[in-house]
Image 1 (cartoon, helix red, strand yellow):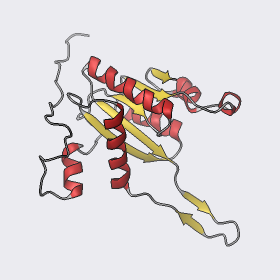
Image 2: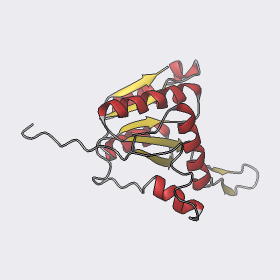
Image 3: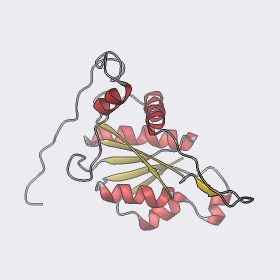
Amino acid sequence: MDQAEPQRPGPQRQGPHPLQGQFAGAGRRDRRQAAFPQLTPSGDLDHPVVAGYDGSPSSRHALAYAAGMARRLGRPLLVAYVCSPGIYCEPLTGQVIGAGRDTEELEHWLVGELDEVCDRAGLDVRLLTRRGNPARELAAAAQEFSADALVIGAPGHVWHHVAGSVPGWLARHAHCPVIVVP
């Protein structure tokens, strides 16, 4: 380490919610984009703390832990939600069916969940939604953005101890520290 990286403070937000009031008159998509800028793997997200979120009680605890960790480290918080591809084959007809989700609605739900779990004041929060295998996609996001840590909730089912789990796979394959929160 020849030179220390300068600390860059995150954006300071005023008011109860960044989407209320300050973007009056703008369309719904414009407000969301203004509150959560587009993600690119190059430089605009400096070593974030990645929180894997799926809506379970343990992932809510992990999200709160990750927000506190990001605040203490002065790093951005990247909330990653991975859903299944949503494509399956109908067994009787053989027709391929894709069940798409509205990305805007999903991101609105994630913002609401984040607001319930923690205080976003002083945090640079970004959202990332992906489709695919949760373990592989979380590991890819952590590597893509050079994450300082990956925080996830513990699996809630007993069969995960037998069949394997997302935390177990990430502990073996992720290229950053993995923190599993009960």
